[in-house]
Image 1 (tube, helix red, strand yellow):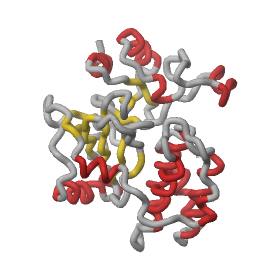
Image 2: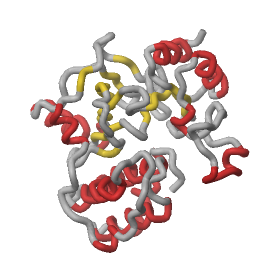
Image 3: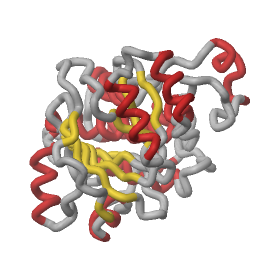
Length: 291
């Protein structure tokens, strides 16, 4: 039994639904029949092993083994949120995450919990899901911090990072998952600090499936760009693109409306068309959504 399969079966035994990503950290492409069916296809009910990203996640041992056998060189991933009872604070050092994490610790928002070191020297801090909706998105006002919860996923140890080749690894033994601090939950669900323009607001889509208030979520994500300090608009637009890409994946906003909203927001922040396209393309790509 491979180390990857042994780890996957251990996670499944504790009730964590797992699935496989491609080596790029993106979801494996849907099979041809699923692509052909298109929007009329229910990803929850799909029997395919690897289609529809985290919708393929399972705790059934035989299915876990079959998924890994189908994508043996991929990366093992966890479906976060209520499905696994987890909320993960994803600290990305490339975008100032360690500095933001230090501030969160000082403010008492990050109690000690089980955590993993990623293959790019970031951190995944695992907390118990509070039972109320916690949407996956960049944490408002905190550079380099993403919240992976409902509608999200994270790569699990012992997967290897696609760029560095280094493994993801648990760093604290078997420390139990800790409850989210009330202040951390409040920070994850913070309201927008500024209102967006009427032009941007008009691109929002009603409905949104599992997302209870897609209008408010979209406004909150886009407001982080307007509120960014000078010199940080480009990286903040990238983070916003990742958050909006998750909304697209969850069916909370159409692809066209998402691109239009991000483009309007980038222009309002005085970004060039090239910078806007780069931020959107990169954010969508890193969330496994076609730009």
